[in-house]
Length: 299
Figure 1 (cartoon, helix red, strand yellow):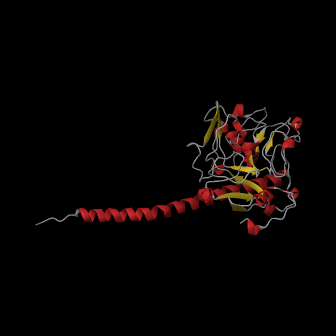
Figure 2 (tube, one colour):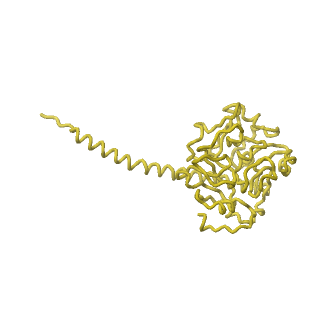
């Protein structure tokens, strides 16, 4: 009895069909994966916005972008918390369900990162999953950044400081956003409307240049005169997610960098196109500019 097998032509046809099916399947899988990542990123921002609102309910103001006592000589207001040094995310830890981590941090010393970030398993190197955008493929594999002997848990999200480039000197910043050094902005101060004002946004680590300054990391544990760049972003430049950009520049890798997610002061989360007109982009970043925002040109 003769045994029949596949001929070479039949085998090649089967392989070709499988290759076509894979080629059709991969984009669909990638699309589903990106949709899930986009949804997770938006949920992260929603939780951060809710934490900020809960903070406001408790303290009758939003937390400072960085709480840094003794900065009056640089033109900043006195720190809301005169006894401790910390950044925006650390202020929100009680509302992130990170109370246990907060208890382990040393905050009552100047440059607390020098105490909290000594080693890859130190308290300041802990990774908070809610602070990581799953679409950003350019984090270190463990989401921990290193600067010299210090290690930092990294973040994708920062508060909006307004329209001007970050500076350690107060009079070099417009301070027209919600979060900056020793800020204590209240909901009532957002006179442009909470639905028209950025609260938080995301940044991309793709093509983020390495520099000799520690603020190029984006670690939640930084708390010195340069730490605004780790905790806040601004609209001094357009959004950028894939080309070379600064740490304090909004942007993402969603849809190839075409959009980025933002939490607004009313708690809503929306995606903004990278191609948004810079004028409208900056209008959304100020709390009391008195500008008219045309939603038809934005969303």
